[in-house]
Image (cartoon, rainbow, N blue to C red; front, side, top):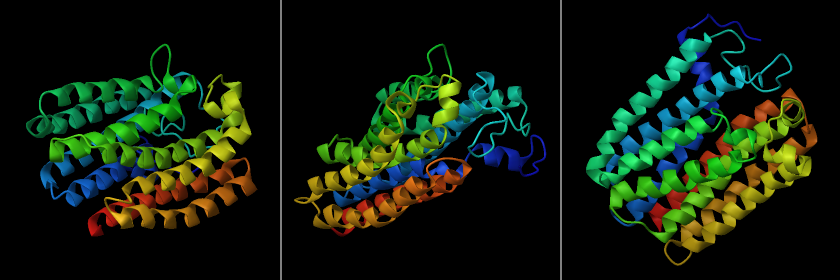
Length: 296
C-alpha cells in the first residue's frame, strides 16, 4: 500500500477516485453534442452541469468510502483500490464532513441552473443528492440490495444526459433519452468491474450486488452485452445524424479487448487495472457519439 500523509491533499485526491470521473463528465459531453446538433448549445449551463455532475460523483465516492467503512465492508481482505478511511488516510469524521461540503458546493453551483431550467431544477438536485447518499447510507442502502446498477443507469445516464440537454434547449427529446441509455450502460460497466472483482468478499459481508445475487456469469456477460446494446442504441440516430449512428461502433474494439482481459484475469486485484480502462472506454463512446452528432 502506498504511503499517504493523513488528511493530505493527496489523500483527498485518491478518495475522489479520479479514474472513475468519466462517469460524471461524459453525460454532459454527449448532451452538449446533441444540443449543438440542434444549434442550441449553451456554454454556461453546460459548464454548470459538468461541475455539478463531477462534484456529485466525488461526493458519492466520499460517501461510499465512509459508509462502507462504517458497515465494515472494507477490511484487510479488500481487493479494490485502497479506500481513504479504511487505510487511515482520512479521519472518518473528516470524510463525512468532506462529503457534505462537496454536496453543498455542488448544490451552490447547481442553483445557477434554475435560471436555465426553472425552479423544478431544485427538485432534480434534491433527488440526486438524496439518491447518492442512499447508495451506501441509510437503513436500506441501494448498493447492498442489488440496485447499484439501476442507480448508475438512471443517474449517470438518463438524468445526467436528459437534464444537461434540457437546461441548454428547454426541451425534452427522445434522442436525449437514447443518449442517456448509451452513456448509462457504459457507466454501469465501471460498477460491474468493481462488483465482479469483489463478488466473493461482497457475499461474505452481505453486500448483495447483482453479481452476488445472479452469479459470476451475470457480471461477465452483462459487461460485454452492455457495450453491444449501447452501440446498437446509437442506430436510433441514423435518420438524424448518420455519423452518430456509425462512429460509436468503433468503441466495440477497446470494449471487447477489455472484456477479454476481464475474463482471462477472472478474479483478484489484477482486475483493478480494468477500472481505468472501462472508464476510458466510456469516454471513447461518449466522444464518438458527440463527434458524430457534431458532424451530422
